[in-house]
Image (cartoon, rainbow, N blue to C red):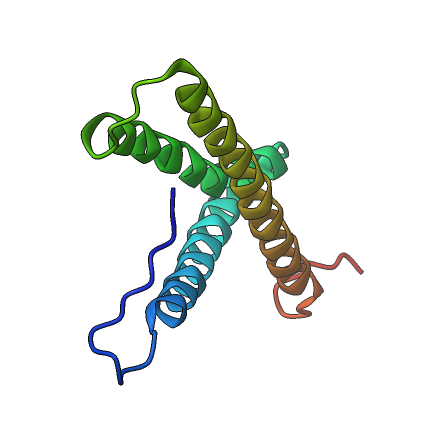
Amino acid sequence: LSVCIVKLKSHQIYFMFGFLFLVFIILLITCSEATVLLCYFHLCAEDYHWWWRAFFTSSFTAVYFFMYAIYYFFTKLQITGMASTVLYFGYTMIMVLIFFLFTGNHRIISCISDSLRRLGDRQNVISIN
């Protein structure tokens, strides 16, 4: 997928990269909150395989990204050659894999840090004296 720069008039500033950065920050915050919430539900249910679910919960954003790339290929692009198609889907798969690993890694780190913060809180830990 190509990154386009929006320039309204010749004297205005390019603002597309700032907008993309803002959307990226919103994506990080939203997926982190959803993952921490689902991780909390799994820990309350005593599901000790929560780390894989925490990884895959927000990593599947990359699946949506890939489905949109397929939709974009068939509706917007005019690619007819086999080599161009293979290059498009090859580079798209590389981007999807990087996005999958990045979002999963970020979310599991946020989930682990939240779990450690909750376990480190003295009021929530049950102690037997």
